[in-house]
Amino acid sequence: MTQMIIDLRSDTITQPTLEMRQAIAQAPVGDDVLGDDPTVQALETYVAQLLGKEAAVYMPSGTMTNQVALRVHTEPGDEVILEAEAHIYYYEGGGPAALSGVMCRLVTGQQGIFSAQDVISVLRPADPHFPRTRLVCLENTHNRGGGRIFPLSNIQAIAEICRDRHLKLHLDGARFWNACVATGLSPADYAAPFDTISVCFSKGLGAPVGSALVGSAADMQRARRFRKLFGGGMRQAGLLAAGALYALQHHYDRLADDHAHAQILAQSLAEIPGIQVNPADVQTNIVVFQTPGRDAVAVADQLDQQGVRVLPVGPHALRAVTNLMVSRAQIQQVPERVQAVLGSGIALA
Ligand SMILES: *Cc1c(COP(=O)(O)O)cnc(C)c1O
Image 1 (cartoon, rainbow, N blue to C red):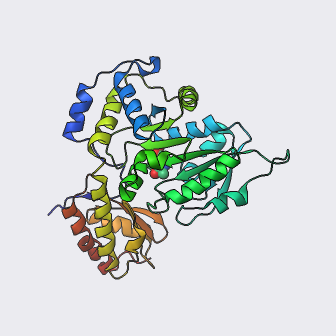
Image 2: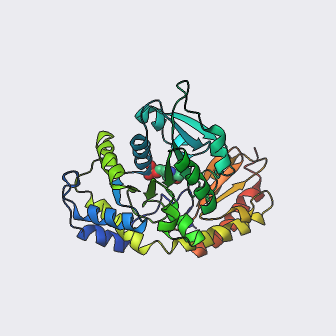
Image 3: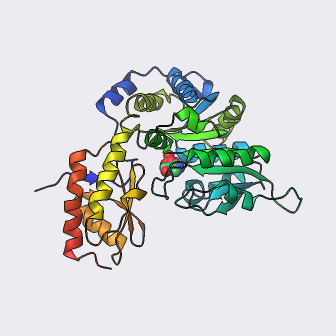
């Protein structure tokens, strides 16, 4: 019997729904590089208002919105403060060095979360010997931190340091919507401490393509120039923006379902001998679980044969991300399939 595949590799695997495809088909478009695309403009206006900022710029990816933000806030030779496991540092191809010529100064957080004191400890005095510290970047929720939420109180304390020291503050908010839904904070309240925020439409929200950078009108004007310079100016991009707008207006609230599914999954996996996971660590839609003594790549291969897809994220660590393609009934089938693999002993390292 062929089993339905349950794909938990990432929340990027989501496919546009029929209704989203209809919105895309009907979207009015124009040449967005010439400023003519009404659907891109509608999306940018909507997102800027939602986050309580002046303007937004739609771009093809979250990597581009982050890297454009770095370029907007810095000059070559400047220093950027980042958490050691930050996506911007870890997964963006060396972009900070290649595209902005900046130094990265790392602080070590706890599952990606750090404090104002951590920032203070790496600040440079104004002295010609040192690079100029210009920018602090946070990530909320934190990808490699297993979907960890950055508490607003920490953010506010860090923002105060940034104000005192004339530093800019950027948020990598690829999963910002998850943080808002999980905490109940409004996007505007959660975005308030930041100069710029990158938000994603193609993860949990389920749009096919795109992210937006959000901030002041002056910063977004600069961002538009660097988007073009980095090759991210798109013409009839309204077709893509229509999916993003639809996703934001229709799939935002249901992120709570993904969080509930992740909690159910974590609790059921915690019962399985050979698996270690603390459900209390699962705050949003990412479940990282350990398979002590078993090679994570081998376990992932075995699970794949059982129709469950997850990603190895360490020698004995795997990641499952709940998303709009996975129903509660499917989540409830996962433990049985995991047990079939772990019980077999095949995946022993
Ligand atoms: C996915 C992700 C990005 C980049 O998104 P792409 O659109 O894939 O380039 C940036 N930051 C974080 C935290 C992410 O999880």
